[in-house]
Length: 126
Image (cartoon, rainbow, N blue to C red; front, side):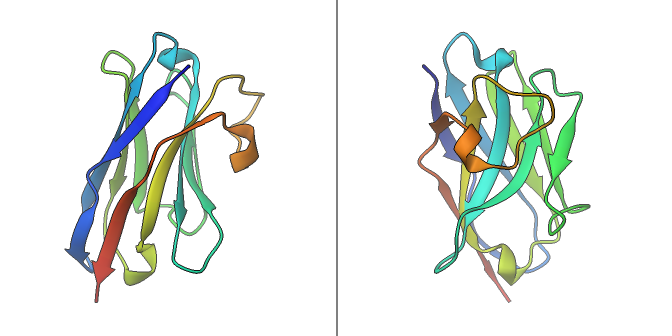
């Protein structure tokens, strides 16, 4: 069992940066594929980024490529999402998720993830 707690969201202006954190409990964190998803008001949840258990492989949604960076520190049981050059369309609740049985490749399908955090709100004003 893995419990996930996100933090770092807030109200920012367009062009600002934020670093979201996701602290995980559980001894098997380092074996999990970790992902970030987001859900904007009135929209479906969408994939943002994922990182392999060792951190060597990452995957990003096209919409965030070049602005978002996912990383993890297995010693701290934490995964991060660095967000630069924030845009109003980045406004959403951001969720981290863990896949305990990852298949080859980094899944962008939320149905493949087994554990979810409660989310952290990011609001970007123009």
